[in-house]
Image 1: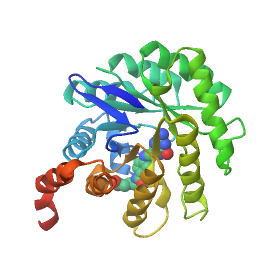
Image 2: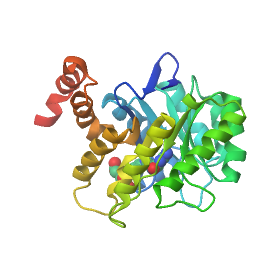
Image 3: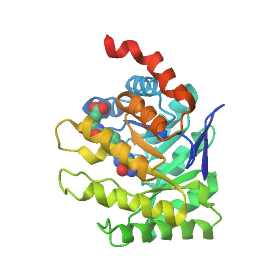
Length: 284
Ligand code: THG
């Protein structure tokens, strides 16, 4: 299964057979005061810098989240998307549940974006899927049902099924739907990792679709987050995840290693190329 995203001149294939796809998480003001302040001042330099650094570090796609308490992302998403689309040749993942913000930003995208996200609630399905159809994008479907987020992997699977079915009804094909099994922190519930891993396997077996994770969520509130995040990436990729919203600066080398270990990097070319290009950073 392949999900195709595009920028001005580049095509990115998120694939159930190929190497793992990295969606850079850092354009997100949650927990990042400097970015929140920059967005509120209309200063795009900091966003530009975050985009550049993530691309250099190996991001295949950039997640763009401008959601902040007390603001409407209709005010920020279009301007940021316009700047990124003009200045960088990388596909964008528009991270907003707000249909108005998505509809305002999508005409400014050059290429084929990923809408992040729709969920299995009627209100979201009715508002977001027509926008996905109209702009011919791909979409991330969060496995949230009418009852909210369940801890039961079967219920998360059912929410995925509902999204896939409703998308099919308006002509959005299976390959354009990326299911997100939801990652919660194991700091609050020590079974949260297992629930996600089980859901990944169920979704992979039932639908064979691409699967995305907000991988860094797993370690919120715990010490040595990097260790937990890397261990989780290995387990989740092994279970069937095919892309993640994560930090390319910290995790690209580990992800290359995982691809190599899974036989998805012939002769270790991608691992070695990345190592050589970034080796000085480690020793510096
Ligand atoms: N699924 C989908 N989209 C998502 C999520 C998901 N979008 C948002 C989020 N979850 C994924 N993005 C992030 C971005 C940052 C962090 C976690 C998830 C994070 N940030 C550090 C912090 O807040 O402490 C800051 C680190 C830094 O300064 O670089 O952990 O699940 N579809």
